[in-house]
Image (cartoon, rainbow, N blue to C red; front, top):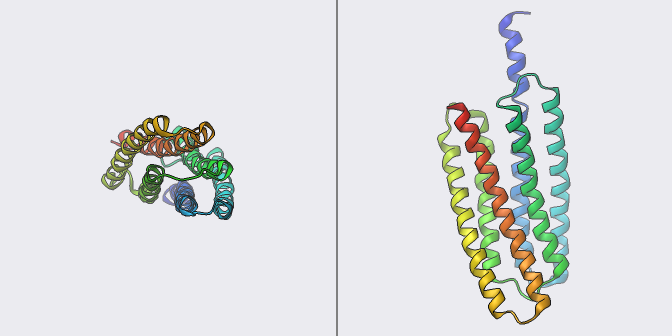
Length: 216
């Protein structure tokens, strides 16, 4: 076998990770959209159908993550550090898990109302998943053209800071105005799950920024 053809085999193999990350991002964005629909559903008894759809996406996400780990174990050549491949897959999986957990808590606790501050955090998470879908599509060209991914990662960081602001303001109002202790606990746990989801999106962005730095 000629040397150039031998090298080409490795190039083809290392590209196999990119579509898997893209699929992770697609599942995560779809789940974030469903979370918004769930939160917009006024009747608690109708929220379960959205949660079940998110559960299906979360299960597929687990399979995609496991596939990345399997491919990593079989690969001699990787597009970037093996540790970063593992970390990025794990963090994308965590983000989808957090969306699933947010939906689960809303369905389980069935709060009397879903305030606009909760919806605002969900909308930031949805925007994050869209931004990260763009980042995953940028991965293959990250070494040559890092700027688009860097810009998207900065936007995710800004959203995380906004989510922190909504979270802090909401918690202050909640403990001041909510007199029903049971409802207070429900809402506290729900907003915490949503804020954790925004943090998880920022974790993904930070890992991508770290990969870019290593390419420099």
